[in-house]
Amino acid sequence: MTAGEAIVHILVKEGITHAFGIPGAGINGFYKYLKDAPITHYLMRHEEAAVHAAGAYCRASGRMALAVATSGPGATNFVTGIYTAWIDSVPLIALTGQAAAALLGKGAFQCADIAEIVKPVVKKAWCVTDAAAVPQVFCDAFKTARSGRPGPVLIDLPLDVQLADIPFEPASYEAGTIEKPLEPDMAGISAALDLLEEAEHPVIIMGGGVILGGAENYLREFAEYTGIPVLTTYMAKGGIPERHPLYAGQIGIQCGAASTGNSVFLAADAVLAVGCRFTDRHTGNTAVYQGQRRFIHVDIDRNELGKIIKPEIPIHADAALALKALTAAAKARGHALKKHGTLPAVPFHETRRAYRPEPDKNRKIIDPREVFAIINRVFDDETIFTTGCGLTQIWSGQYQIINKPRTYLPSGGAGTLGFDIPAAIGASVATGRKAVAVMGDFGFTFLAEELAVASRWNLPVAVIIINNACLSLIRQNQKYAYDYEYAVSVKENNGFIDYIKAARAFGCDAKRAHTYEEAEAALVWAAASKAPVVVEIMADPETDCDMGGDLAHIRRFAGSPAR
Image 1 (cartoon, helix red, strand yellow):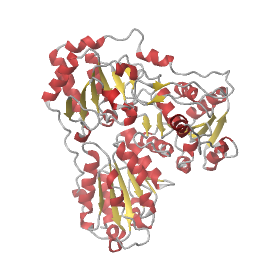
Image 2 (cartoon, rainbow, N blue to C red):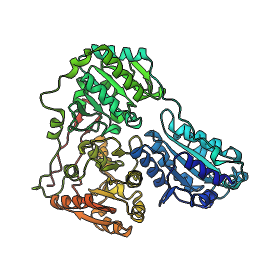
Image 3 (cartoon, one colour):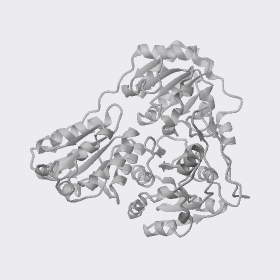
Image 4 (cartoon, rainbow, N blue to C red):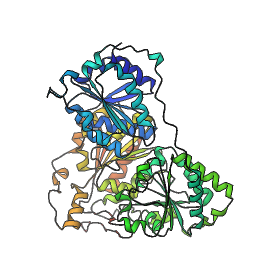
């Protein structure tokens, strides 16, 4: 059979049931056989969106999906999506078409060396010039994407390779095995418990790697046994329920007062960080962050241990296995760690609630921060939220209440505008559940055409646009860091640019809200809809967002005086 047909059989064997892509002449040798496969294909409107959808599909479900594009600009449009998945450790297979092998390096039409282009942002990339190698390359690709710290891989297929006959028996293909999860060194486990026993105020940081590794229940079990409070990074939001008595809040320089996490961390003398990369938006000034605290760092990626924060005890291991070992060892010691079980007089979640702004209906214009109180009331815990970048994304992280893992899917390390809508599509396809993209008005102009995909498949996707007619994160940075504002006002977005008409042009019903009453009614309608919808909420253009340069100096902002 041809290599293109063999690839389809391999994808099925590897468990791929959904693909997001756009066909083209350079990949049609593969698409010929995809059409009859038990794989549902979603025709996206931009190649970048295909990768975002495949990545969110995996983040929401734990199962991998396929992203497919043709050669040249089709392949290069993949790069932003691949980078977004790579930095957030999301496994997926990116498959691109290519000009015939004999034309490589000769400037042929739509011939870009995509395997070289993406090497800095993939776990591995192949350009397959020997058709006989196709089965082994795909086997290696799935194993690479899933093993250790997960991430995207790319396979570039010249057209003649897709069309070449190869000896292949589908029944004989064995799916690529995942490398055995890395066991922790028990000496490190024992040393970690010693450190936690010595500490007066230890905390646990749950990073995004805990969610990716399916280890959130093991972390919670350890916390409950020891009584140690749990903080979450932005990427771990939802890993522990909001009202859990040990959930001390989110930590980071863009969390704001509503978190409580920063103050708990600053009072800590020992930190157990699991699946956390200690990136700049999390730590801020690292001298303030590290202070005199003693760190235990558990991570599947050896390169992360000591890269930014120097741990006293590095544990190179799978998060789930390390947490199970910590719990077993703690129980074997008895209740020595229970001294940390004293909770604050006012529960953490009650303190957070006091800092979450509620709608003030006496205001003349909607405060964008107050919209999230309505979102929290209207949507249930099964709803999946996606968000990309900007103040709306940061406010979402500060004020949204998320109680379940894999239901909050932001673009974390990349901060990608345009991630939101295709990610909501991928998450909804993977789970069959309501997925809500929360974004600003400027972010909506990136990949808004993907609404056509949601309409074509009648997916229960809702898009919430907080329209403040401004590049508000950039405006705030210019204003407070450089004392100027330029090229950030987009008044036309609250004027002759009509997002309601744009949404309807792509087949979605849509509503616009100017008041809190209208906003609540529109969001209730969106939550109940089983079809794709858009809600546009007109908001104050001058409201700033709490943030700072280090955890000890988070600046709080009042709303705009234009009320």
